[in-house]
Image 1 (tube, rainbow, N blue to C red):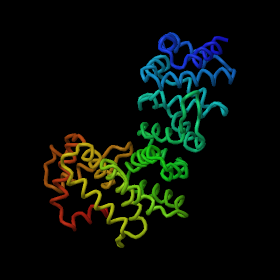
Image 2 (cartoon, one colour; image 1 turned 120 degrees about the vertical axis):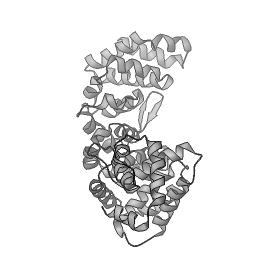
Image 3 (cartoon, rainbow, N blue to C red; image 1 turned 135 degrees about the vertical axis):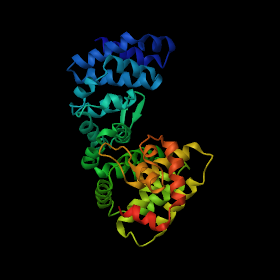
Image 4 (cartoon, rainbow, N blue to C red; image 1 turned 180 degrees about the horizontal axis):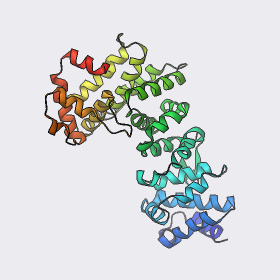
Length: 332
């Protein structure tokens, strides 16, 4: 009964500050979380989810209240098991903005993978309109410990559909996930990309990606270029193409963009991915090989480099490499 009354008051308030302030207090939100835990009535559960989603879009701090009340996200584990509420609960989960530390349970990755596979329909929660599939990409990009599992079990068609959407945000979310899944050992990346290409076989994939590259913001171009470059290598490594040339040109332009920090940060990640040297947990091991080739001693090679520090070293190494050295690296 209380939820019905709160919902009526909220919907008729039209964002009134007094009502918003009264309903957005921590005890009220914590009480709504208790309703989600205790109620078995789908109507009540949906109204509560919708109200919380509306609260979160108006004030992100409300997400901290939910995380403090339920740090293990147990309520979402419960809601995700409901076929009728799953996608609405998934939308609320995204709006809560959980960090990687909140998604460490092995239960979470299969549940979020379902968001991608079945989240093709937009979800409406009062004034909130959201794509579960797009938001699922963002969440999957956060629990990076499970890259191998995600790469093996991801519904490739769901990611492809986001790449093909005429929505720049959806495109970016899909590429953010693809970027994380390229941070694997080279054999795993090759397997993943081959499966991706099989799903894309009926489409003019490379042309679509090329157009996306040409329209992308400077800081987005290195990662898109890397994806194009690696997909193109799968076909014929020795045969050059316009796609490979465009990808190399984009990476080269990023190398020369010394004043744009965002571009340099993305470029650093690009060089790591092109190296294809990652531990099983996704940590980069490229530094050791590059520093050894450049003649640095063991003590420096064993030190931990930040992304930007590593970028400076990678540039120095790449500029010193002879073509034969680079070829040797790419073949190993």
